[in-house]
Image (tube, rainbow, N blue to C red; front, side):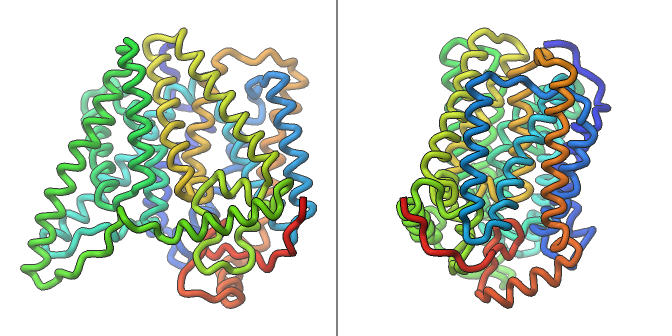
Length: 471
């Protein structure tokens, strides 16, 4: 790979700033809305800024089959939105997903800056959050406070939102740690990575842990095939997870005895490993929607209709796509993703050195994301969505390190699309953003319940649905 570029690219700086500052600084900035909603507002503001700063960069070129697949997918999405019970909210979901992909393309267009600095930014972001949170938890344990899976996590309304971030962040940070030339930064970011892994075991993020196993598996297979370049990443990720498991066990054992002695002890929560947290009922509802409206689904975001008592998304991306977008669109998305993974695997065969390390990191991240996506709302939450943008942008930059063979006119025409999409999404949500507290109170009053059900906002219901569309 080429020598590292200077860390002065405004697009990469913006995303790095979001990853580092959100959600750590949210509790210090606002208390009028939840951390989830504050992160969404920050995301809505950031997307057009990143698109505007990168508007002059030529986006990576796509093959003819890929362009055709995206056109067909866009048509299917628009048809699904048009026929949905609430076309306005269906359009918002489509714009949101389209913006994430478009901003990832803008990030990929930054090429050297993205490749050189985004993994380091990921390692810094992991350290900046995990170290102070774990220190506070340990200080509480010393004074007798319990240390369990329901550990409070500043900036996250639910510990699972934190686990979603870890699914992407930990494999990426494992590579970022070794990219620092300074031994001090390597030590600090390595300690931060270990601290985050300890928090992962304490909060028992099962989907994320399965994702980590998949990431380790990818690196292990590459090492067994003689690719020694990935050995450092494999040792850091696998060894760190094993060490973190030991440390979390010791810490929780100490905290349990201390809390009992201090009088703060309480009965342990129900076993997380054996609980399905109502996922089976959520998955069943999604499957019923998918079979009732197989061609175009019930409409983007429309799993959030009808005030379902358990959730506004099915905690499974494949089932969410089947239910809301239909079978043809879901299969097309699967083919697009598979073709990109095949392209990355082929590129790895001819790569070496740092280029191989970065590609292996991206592929390991995708393995983690793929596994966790079957069991969680990874693709729904605003902070994890921005980490996914980082992963998609990094992957795109790695696959297309040379400037795309586009004319100047074509480059300008397509480069403005992310800006237009992000502005459209911001304008779409602007009326609610301007009076966010009132909007959330109204939704909560209209759809009462004993728990929040997040989708776009923390209270994510969108109203009643129409009868199922027949084939």
